[in-house]
Image 1 (cartoon, rainbow, N blue to C red):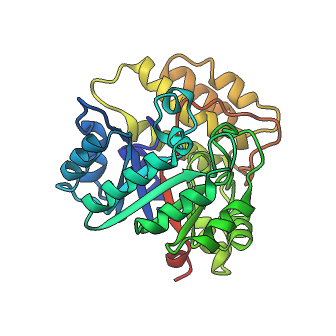
Image 2: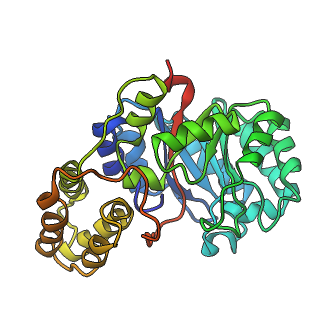
Length: 337
């Protein structure tokens, strides 16, 4: 997720149980763009032991091809095209999920990128923009251009994150395309992951928001699918996670208030499983300094350290994300190996 699942977060997730591979934040591609240095760091400084795919968002073919060629000089696992971002500021520029309105554009873009990528070329999409009218056409273009892996978020762009996820449309993609499909959308826990895998028949799962809330989710999913005891974190474990997250995301030039503001992006998700009343979220959002933030964490997490961290978000406890797209991948093939 943009500005959230960056290199420090990838490192921390690896500590708790890494996915099989990662996708970077998206590189914004336009006439004057160059790959953002802080996202390039996710490629060249990756020490997680997991491959990283470079994710692109854009629609101008010459600029996309130019950017691909530059990114291929780095240690990338492959190139990923984002056709799923539901943020209005993105789709209004006819990129991300906005591309789903124009199958002819998708045809040309997939063809150009497939020609430019000698290795793995992957695509993330939703099931449509404001309807599913073009869904089969886009799936057929995935086949036409030899995409190696397709991730499908089972909502339209206009549905955002609000509606129920249409897992039947993901199953339809599994049945229609020739490449492996990752199921994405509201995979909240290991139990839910197993259910979605069974319902969709997908080769793997993509998790974003709920890996921020629960960094153990990849480990737990592997344990559940392998029939082993599933790790159950406590609020004390969550306190450790928050402390490590603060240390990982610290930068010498980062003002304290800016660092605290960044932490709130993560804690907006974490807080969904801390208490059913939303008290942690309410007080955390009002912290302005590191001391205030950790006082809240000590009071709501450390003081209740033996209590369980809820496996699912509490009903009615809402995150307020300031981010755009999930970017972590989890393959069932290697989970079950």
